[in-house]
Amino acid sequence: MIDTMRTHYTAPLARAFKEAPWRTQTQAVALVSISLLVVAIVGSFYLTVASRAATAGRDLQRLEAQKTVLAQANDELRAELADLRSVERLVQRALALGFRPANPDQIHYVRVDNYPYTAQTTLPPRAVVPEATPAALAQAADWLAQALQGLMLGPGQEP
Image (tube, rainbow, N blue to C red; front, top):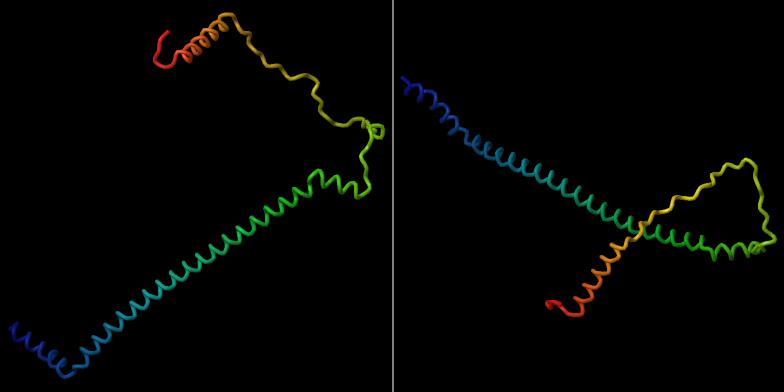
């Protein structure tokens, strides 16, 4: 019974494939097309990521070059500022504006009442230096004598 059912149902299916061979060709073409579509999608993702990485690398190089140029310009401006603030430059500028060095009799100090200032009225504490005891001096002299004697005799020789 099962054999008859199997032949009964498989016969029309086999006959349908024999009558329509284009179905197997269609399935093969569909499988190849889907495979090509998947490969194209994966390839486009790869190209997108690679192009973004390359763009980011170029941007990084451009920004590093710009940083170097700006650092150099900053150093040049600092050097120019130091030159403009130099004492010689300020003296030349003051002389060009008509200023002259003041004599001691031309200097007048102005006293301002209630001017808030903090003046140190006491001296800072002095450092305490311990006195050298005779025993410490004798110890240092003995050490110095031994060191000099060792230098005079040379290495490996005993007095």
